[in-house]
Length: 463
Image: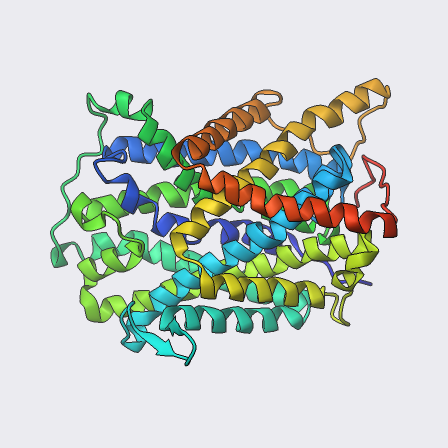
């Protein structure tokens, strides 16, 4: 009998996927004069991000329970719309949703680890033809180590994921308490968190929309457990639990962390910082003790990398099962993990870690993932319409969307707002997205004549 992931692994996947680089970088841009430098507005935008993520999670629970196959948006869009759209989404997931996101986490983990070994961010290793920063080298080594962990199998990888997520949560819990335990060590920022006469205008401003782009990147990963629904124990109960509970926990953590960041440090100390954890820890405990937190933060980011090495290869595996051309990706080792899917994700992630910058990866991920998740959420209307048209009784095992139809509408409208802001601010990110999509279309039509596309019934029974 094939081993499956437990409820705790699924919930920890959601938490680990979400709590990554975004929460430790976004505030540095929000406190600028060109951002939303109003403490109350900043807390509101993080609450709004959590509400939007919860709306999406609720819809994904229904969509995933109706289709009941691993693969995330690749599977969902293939079923709801057309295999071409699913293939494009799967392509995006492999190269952007997972590989690029893993690369971003690796870059951040490498930078957080530098103070531990006494190197600066500018330190590079000369490899002859080119130089590579020590941070990038550390990031690549972490990717290799985590991938080897998941080669050991579903059970071992699940245990590793749980423990790394628990370490992350303990770290964050400590981080929320330490400012009050060591209050005499530093001078608090003195920031007033009450609404001001500028708050309302700030919330309805263009910069607020821009800040929401970074916030939604920080919340990306709320749909993580949907990628393993076919490999999940009792998905009818465990899938919605993991999606909703994981998202709620992270929303609370995000609001509290941003409060602590602003409580401890002034806006000028936070501005443009991409390692806010280090900034705040050093101010409270001093540089020497702060080094311990640098090490702890790098460990915390590993849980996010690990979660993506669980979900990402499952997308590759599903593509390998559906298309003969890519059948090698569908092969599992004796421990039940898609070994070539892991190798594929690892290879692309290392290349992106070597040759990309952190900010470019963040913005690129934000736009492309938003497109796929928005289409999936809209799909709940299509699935329900088909059910009514066929005069079918809703399957008893289908999880219903909470707050339907308001929740999917809210998610879609916010997504459209963010996509519009992306395109209006800088067209190059749309061009990059199209540059990713076009090869997928070409490859799909070149290979589909040799492949047998499978039709899977909707509303499959769920264990």
